[in-house]
Length: 509
Image 1 (tube, helix red, strand yellow):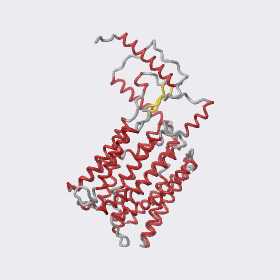
Image 2 (cartoon, one colour):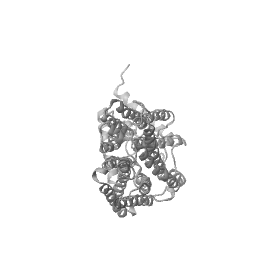
Image 3 (cartoon, one colour):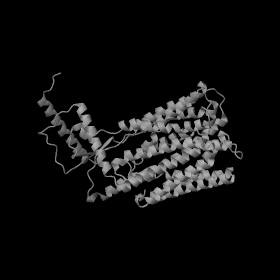
Image 4 (cartoon, one colour):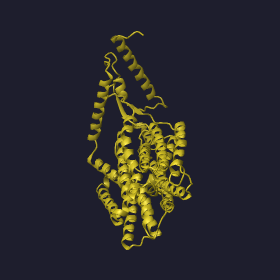
């Protein structure tokens, strides 16, 4: 094959630039093209339409179903994990670690996953001037779905074979592997607030769907876990301890096939042309740069772009970021601690004496009775300000905590009173999680969607991990101290909330 000379290479690059520019301009003025012209005065109706846009129904349904699957996976072992750990030689605190440890590995998995799931800058590939092409990095979701399904299957199988191997730490290893799949929590949230496919007035509504999935997982998971433990299945492989993991592994195999067949990913990068700029001067072509040089140049451009975006965030916006991350951590800390503590506390309390089956039913009952209210929230979320919903949910959850600590002080903990506390906590803090990311996405520029979703998700992980460990240790540290810490954390959130009340105002929907 004949090698091209320097002059011929310059001519070929020049022709390539012209062809690509022509293609981009054709897409710009084609109705079905993926590129859009900047909004003009006559485009108010289009802009309003963009505020209400939604992704394709099949892909959206898969994302919501994935949220439900992840929530069930997280909660299905809650009912029997303490008994399983004791059978293999562990204790209640170890059980809490088993419940919460996946979030630690989810957080670690997010770092490489988010590094490689974003699109490449077209200005980097073509050496076009930054003033001509304004690019927004937007993460892709299909890769995360495939990795999540694989990790979930592997993790559940490992969790199940710990019984046959009679090895305690194998259940911990299995949950760590499942933790990689729980990185999908962030991708579900990011998908429902992605400015490419979801309008600003639809983000709280889609977040409400995620909360419904969260409630379904919190209901179905513990119930199935307790039911499988009750039935028992006399087998060294498929029994009351291992059957939840085997069933979930089979469900993920089916779900993975559905994802491969029907999920349609969003474009990796949306390009926006600045029409005021002139065309690329082809008579002075850009010299060819080695790959290592272009990578360093791209990295420097990314850092410069990040620094520019960072300097554009105002003090009130930083306050909102801190406030939403705190409430995200708080809600999942309280929910996670109660879900880990209820089976242990119920088994140790003389007026309750719960089995794993009874504990699973109790946890599930809180989700079932709260489900109608989640549906009402879905219908009215588009008409309610996010800050009002956050205030209502947190206040309702705080009422449950205050009632419970009074019951502990008077030693009057019975099934009915404990259920009233759990119902208000489960409903209140689940409702509060609806708005943490959606409100933040409305306050920050679109290019911050990836960063804001990661910040909220890491706050979730911190809350889930520490909450599960704290809940498993509730009896050891004293139940009054256990609830007192949760009330104190809510108090800190209340101070942030009241201080930033005016800055938390955002568009409804």
